[in-house]
Length: 223
Image 1: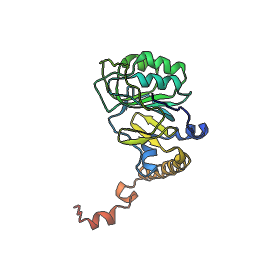
Image 2: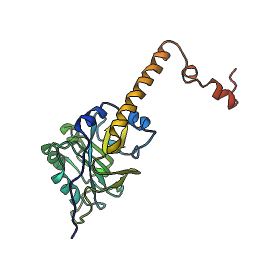
Image 3: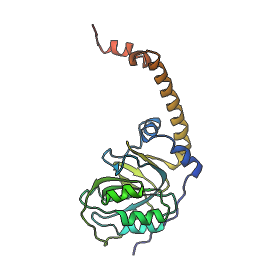
């Protein structure tokens, strides 16, 4: 017998919404270049985007029974985050389960295994980020952890941590750090807007980033 709990704390929805205004890359840089999942995990369509609390689940390779359990218990706006052993040769999620997710008003799916029915997923518009696309089917045999810390894409993800994913990739923000990540992302955007303004005014990257002394110290000579 395996006893699992689906109870965990989620950040303030208003904070999650505000965090979602910033890109995955901005958040990653703003929080000290932390939290980026493996760059191979990408959306099945470049327009897909999500930001929501992680509902974590561990699935055995080529087995999606616990994914179906997770979908059944997750709350609206939750993002199902699947640690499936980084097994790419299985389509553990497709249009049928995506429709179940939409009906339950879930926020998206992130998995380190494969998905299929990508044309239907694009049409449905449910945000899906996966390590691969594979038509190979799965079994429903092995039960496992639910709503516990997991490893996915080289990062630790805990239930209630916030997942931000877009065309460029996926980043995780610790649930206790969401407000700080928002503040730092806002500051980073303001700084980048300033750089762009200087470029448009005619300055070079060397001038804007004050690279002259750095390049000189490294011995770069440009004729």
